[in-house]
Image (cartoon, rainbow, N blue to C red; front, side, top):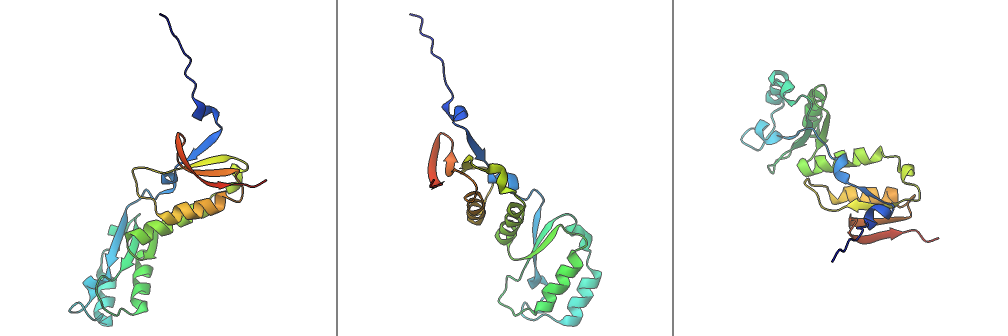
Length: 171
């Protein structure tokens, strides 16, 4: 018995465009600078000592990295200390943020998504890829959805073979 069937890829014929937000993820290293290491007894920032540290520290080790500045102890750190750090880091780093790694990733995704010309997806049917190898903050999915929903016919989440409807233009 000779049975030969043509296999039809209905996903490919559907006209769906799959977008993986991992494409917008930062590719460079993210480091966290914890100002607690500059505190006297873990409690107080001495201006004279801090300024000496700022002057003597090798800032080139942060070259081409994204930096998040935090204070992981329960100390009151004057705002000018963060300003001094940011100013010293700026010539070396790709970006400086206040916050932990998740905050830095969130900020970098936001910046990348701000640069998208959503009009290229005018009247398209979009699937936003759900699972991947890297962490994508929920805020990126929200920001991307808000931008897309102004121009597309529909937005789905997941994989083309198994999606969850998110948005459909009423017209």
